[in-house]
Length: 120
Image (cartoon, rainbow, N blue to C red):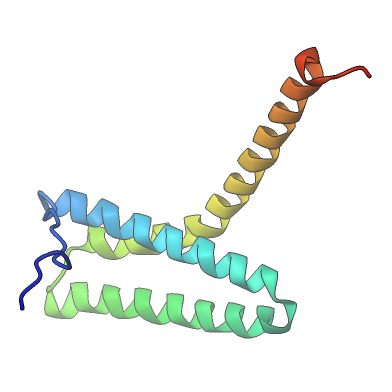
């Protein structure tokens, strides 16, 4: 019996500029994740870093080569992915700083609000 529930509907990206932007965002997210992985498990930090640097250089060089030789993708796409990858670790840092600030703000709100204190 056919069940249509598993079908996922999606929207196609409107134009190439949106695709370029989105792929840069994907790279930023991926590199933030990989940075977190490298920092979380010290035993694998250097293997992850080496692999990611190798992957970054290889992907960027091959992308630039494809732009020049095959002309099968726009330069903006390759550069967006390269810049997004470089932004990833900084995005992770920014996220951690935001979270720390938010937690301190919430603790400050609780400390200044006497309604939660009950005197017995």
